Figure (cartoon, rainbow, N blue to C red):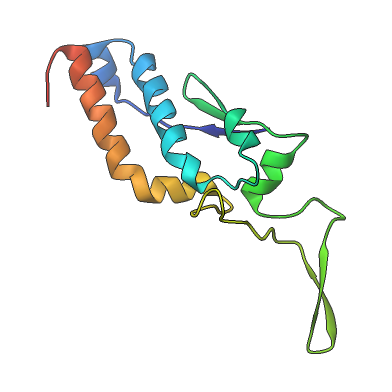
Length: 137
């Protein structure tokens, strides 16, 4: 299991003026989870089907610590590939992701999604807050 905490910091003045923004934070986390999906490594898509959003926390679930190791991009301790290079035995503990299901699959997938979607998420949050106070953009 691996948790990603979507930091949706709202200034105290905004919270005082608008009120509780936990629903906006939750909607932002759901949007971030949808936008991160193409970056999540997948062989079968099982982990995506088991992903949950609660409040502003995205929980990626897998068997055991699968999501943890996938996020790090490393194999579990003791399951290394051995590689011979120029006559030397090297240990390769990196995971080599298949890009068949998700072409953007990578370790630290949430950061890849954030780099691509940060501006979209800011705009999304702004629009949700404006809807909450009755304004439109």
